[in-house]
Amino acid sequence: MIVPINLEKSKAVKYDVVIDELPILTFNRKVAIVTNTTVSALHLETLKSKTFADELFVVTIEDGEEFKNLATVERILNELFENKLDRKSLLIALGGGVIGDMTGFTASLYQRGIGFIQVPTTLLAQVDASVGGKTGVNNTYGKNLIGAFYQPEAVYIDTEFLKTLPPREFAAGIAEIVKMAVMFDKAYFDFLMEADFREKVVLEKVIQRSVELKAEVVNLDERESGIRAVLNYGHTFGHVVENETAYKTYLHGEAVAIGMMMANALAVELNMMTEEEMGLVEHFLNKHQLPTTYEVKDVDAFYDKFFLDKKAANNKLKFILPKGIGGHMMRNDVSEDILKKVLKAF
Image (cartoon, rainbow, N blue to C red; front, side, top):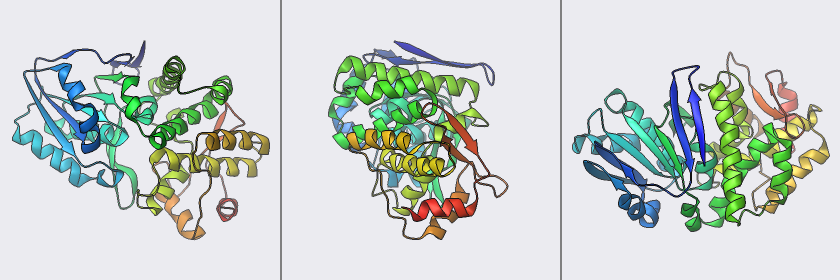
């Protein structure tokens, strides 16, 4: 199955998200696969056996969110220069969201921009991170604060890669799936409540619907100036959680799950969501072993970190909040008192 991405409104960019067995990939140019030590051991030979290029190189970096920084990007760039890649060369991101984000960002920088392809190997990357062209790295101030909007030439989603995914990583992807449902599609949320993700047909249907929802949003708003910001539901809170724990305690999807519960609590406080609706989301997250609680040790420090969020502007905070289940609203009028009341509850 193919989900097209069509950005004609902005730059006439088109590419396909292909959800199927990984095809044979043939290129009349130099190609570098960027991956990490964990994914390399599991899937590199599969990708190499299906990739034919004038020259094929592999760049392997350490595994972990803590390596998603400018120093690692510079290491990748140096290897590309050492192997004499040119402006017609191509990068292939083989891995999860960290690899995809860094490979795309590196592609945007190398000789002012070369092509790249996404081959996501985690559920989170397949349903969210690999689609839409958001690339970047973290720094001491926060998550993905350095980056670029840079679209891939194609995305190849093969659920076979998920068979080696640890249960915790798989659950982290489910957090990004339910995020889409809560924001945009109540019928999809109801389907997810009963879905058995272990069934291949169900899993492919879930991936397809998640990608379709994201594609609709990205096609309307590539650079997050409007509706695309809605995809950050749970992220404003979740990014602070990740920053406070130095990106070592929680996987990204786990932090988003916590962030969604914080956003839901704020929505309840603002009469945008009922306690019952919040309970349904919490039940779903608990069912898939995702965290729903977090100890805010310093409310003032947590609050101050909100202002490093990319959606903050003119010293005003913007929150993406659920309007029931299946609806959304962006709010920039939430008082400090209400926010701190919600944080104190955690």
